[in-house]
Amino acid sequence: MGFTERLLSTVMSTIENLYTKPQIITNLLTTSTVVLFLAVLAVVRAIQHYRYLLTLPDGPWGVPVLGSLAKFTKPFHLQMYEFSRQFGNFISVRMGSQIIVCINDAKTIRKIFSRSEFVARPKSALDCIVEGFGIITADGELWKKQRKYLHKHKMGLKFWGNVSETMEARVSHEVLDCLNALTKDTNEDPSTDSTGVNLSPYLSCSISNVICSIIMSTRFKHHTERFAKFINYFDEGFRLFTLTGPTIFLPFLRFLPNIRNVVKKLRANRFELLEFVDEIVEDHKANLADRKLNGDCSSEPRDLVDQYLMEIKQRREEGTLDEVFDDKDPETQMKQVLMDLFSAGFETVKTSLLWTFIHMLRNPEVKAKVVKELEGVVGPQRLPTMEDMAKLNYTRATIYESMRRTTAVPMGTTHSNTRPVLVDGKLIPTNSHVIPNLYAVHMDPVEWPQPEEFRPERFIQPDTGKVYKPKNFLPFGTGQRMCLGDSLAEMELQLFFASIMHVFDIDCVDPEKLPSLDGNFGATLTPSDYNVKLTPRNIEALVTANLKAKPANYMHMRTYGC
Image (cartoon, rainbow, N blue to C red; front, side, top):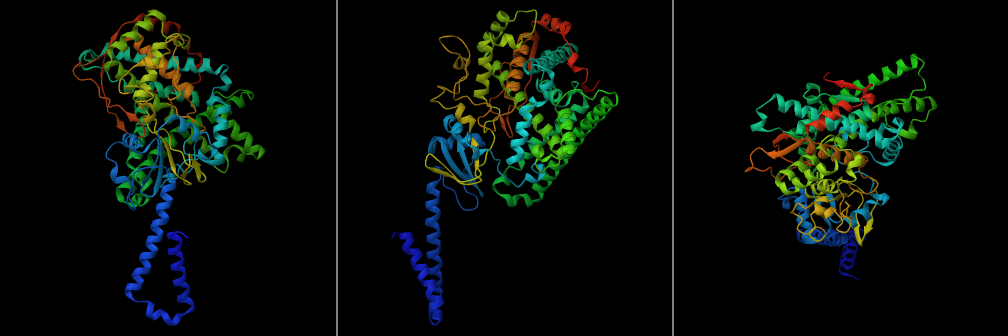
């Protein structure tokens, strides 16, 4: 019999005596006896808890209530990376009331996230804001049905014919619009020669137009108040959500006045965004009604909104709404999915591009090689295409190296498990927060020698000169919860980056003040604002692209700001 078992036996024997021999209670209930009794219980509980901790992945010790929160002195991804250097690639950290399991190597991330037990999302005190709608925070059957639905209909592109060609046409249209806006503004404002241009608002508008045009046939003109207001709700939402982070680990904090005000503001922002999406949905309903009135009953859906509305109508008539929407209100679910797809498809692409241009400013020799390759493959008379990208190995490798060196979402997306799971002999308790540290994966000095250096050659096979993706490169995550739009995101990154680099020379406004690689950690790792000096180089390529532009697929679009 072990020590713990002997202690429990003594405690149970004492309790039995108290019940069977009440005459001795008075003698036993002295202060010293009660203290000893409680001490024994405390020791037993401590031993049990210690044994439980030994079943978990290794990690730093914490204190009651706070766990290891007091040990966080760096941004989350950097602190977890430091812990992994001490305790291994598979670690657990108690943060307040939550167990955080952090995975810091690609092999284990793939192994864990390929399992069906880890497709859940962790619950938090802020679930009341989204209320289980959408695709990002959805769980269980709703998530499975909606993800399957979005895959089936290619996010609204299925009925436009060849999906890849349609995607490229949409992206190329917005690339051209972005280049035109940059050219126009720099020509009209001579001060940009000295002050430079902030690429962020141009990329924000053009990249958001890609996803908006695909899922809801909506676009924005550059510098319009409506877009500024629309995007501000998302930007503010990301910022506010970061402020509520501690409530995930210390739920009681949500009752504090300042946190309650933040949550109230988040709800108000979501309501405003839903109102905007509702306006678009009502336009689609009116258009579908007009088409039916005109006898065009067999018309195919133009986008994801049309597809959802047609599906909802058909399912209502058949009484089978639950097969797609589970027990959720279908229109609210549709609107939240639209907002989820926008936020996921906009922020990470824009952030990755901004980082890539920073690396060009900080690594002029890499920039020169990219420009040389573009000149040789594309030439001065046109813009790059996806067909060109197959030959632009160094340009693509440069994008991948930027995504490795400054991963836009360094902690990936948090998963949770629906039951206790043993991995490599260690327990992951039910409802743990399971986080892939993509920063650690991409900065592992064993897999990536001198990881701080920017070297696109890491992604080029020495024997063939072709670009490739090593197994330890996971910018879009992995597993069943992997990014839905990874192919679209790659296309956007390649065409926007290659086209801007092809049309303009990009330089620092002040060569003595390079943009920093110290990002701002929140929902994504974003760079601080910076300006670049743009000098037209292949402006004839832009002229030719405008002459050959074919906006036929945009005739049905609603463009705000015209």
